[in-house]
Every structure is written in C-alpha cells, then in structure tokens.
Image (cartoon, rainbow, N blue to C red; front, side):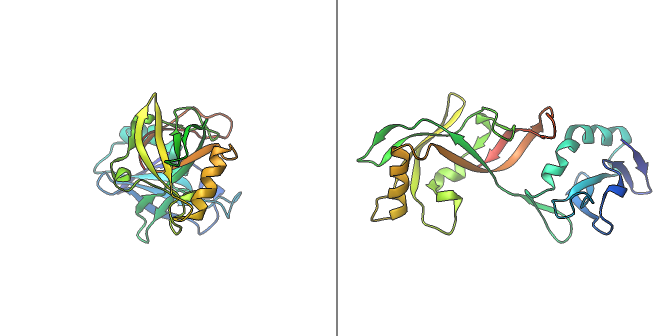
Length: 233
C-alpha cells in the first residue's frame, strides 16, 4: 500500500486518485481522539453510487508508519462498507451514525396459541446469510429494546405496532422470542399478519440493528462479508 508522509499526516493510499470523479473528494474524521481521517469520493465507474475510500490519514504526532499500516490492514477492507450507504456524515466530515442494517431469517412457526395470538419464533441465527454475513448471538445488546419491545411491520416507525415481543432470549446460539399480536380491534393489520404466519404464507422475521463491532471475513468473489460481534437492537 503506497505511503506518503507530510508535515501533519501519514497518508496510506487504498485506491488510485485517477479512479475517482474530479471534485468528488472530501475528508472525513473517523476518530478525532485517535487522529484518524479518511479521504472519500465517487468512482468514475459508478458516479451515482456510494462513496468509496481513496486514502487514510493518520496524525503523525499519534502514529508511526508501521502502526498506521497495521490499522489499515485490520480495518481498511471494511471501509467502503462503513462509509457507503450505511453511514451518515455531518457537515464537518464526522461520522455521526452507522445506520441500522436489516437481516431476514426464515424459521418454522410452532406452538401457536390462538387465545394469546402468539407463537414461538426465531429472530436471528449464526448461520451465514445471503450476503455472506454472520450475526453472533452473544453480541446482542437488548436492554433498551426490552424496555419497549414492539414489533413493527416492515420496521415502519410511522405505523402502529402489530405485536410485542415476549420472552426475548438467547438460546442455542439463536435470538428467540414469542410475538404476541394485537387484536383486530386494536390493529386490523396485526390480524392479517398473524393469520399469514399461522397459515405459512409468511415464514420469516427480520432484525434491524446498529453495528458496534465486527470483523471482515475472507472475500469470495466480489462479496465483502462481515462477522458481526456486537450490535444493538
């Protein structure tokens, strides 16, 4: 990886600047305290796509060249994923949020209770998903979710909830719960969704989470996979 040293920074290049659209570059702050920044821009091959990382900048007062290289080797492969569509960056170039990610998991519905309008369900497993990612069950941080464990149809925050999640727990390396659906009087959509699950027209739940910690997995083809280790629901 090409390295340039200026008066203030150690710059490690990830992609050649000639690959990027002229005038699309901007510098963002990854970690102000540690002195890490990144130069991002739009690729000529995909000018309407998400931003890609061109180089990393490390504060010379806090990093040596070898330390900076090691950081890039450990974190650089996931940079395009971090700085792409999943990220919000403020006007000063600081990362203010890695947006929530959705994952879908199929399961076999069982133990239906029509009186309670509930059944046993699995929210996520440690199986490799369609995008090549893994969600480690031990990584779930559920404290805040359990304070208001509502289930939203298609994760819509503008519509009424269709159910609440009871008995949320980690079991057999899976995130399990028991959805209890609202009555038709409370929410007609809840009745429809419950019946669709009961009659096996619906066979999956999805989780939405904010990633906290992850590691890259070996790349297969052009797929960049993640092993998510910690995340909030």
